[in-house]
Amino acid sequence: MEYKILGEKNDIVLINTDEIIIKDTQSALDLIASAQYESNCDKLIVYKLCVAEDFFILSNGIAGEILQKFINYSKKIAIVGDYSKYTSKALKDFIYESNKGNSIYFVSDIEEALIKLASK
Image (cartoon, rainbow, N blue to C red; front, top):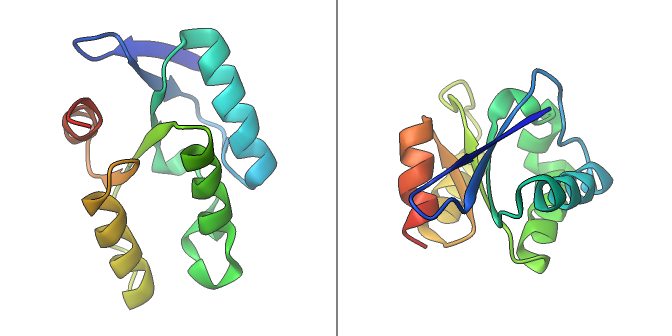
């Protein structure tokens, strides 16, 4: 896993890996801890391919549990990827509402992630 510091204030970390690093609440906690240790940043960017597909099935509750950990630990996260393949209205609403908030973002590219994270 590679940590790349970004942002005008050097307070955003891009996590580069080909592995699925967010699978459940424990893996989210591990990511929060390792990103804090390695980068000292409270704002994280991860690629959607690093998030287990189960996360996007809202009925299992995994997304809520995982994202609550980021909120509890005052971390912000932008998940970069293409969400057009998902047809669930509930998921689309979840993504829309998350993007209106100030902690969790589902964005299409790194530039959008940096804008969202830098503005909050």
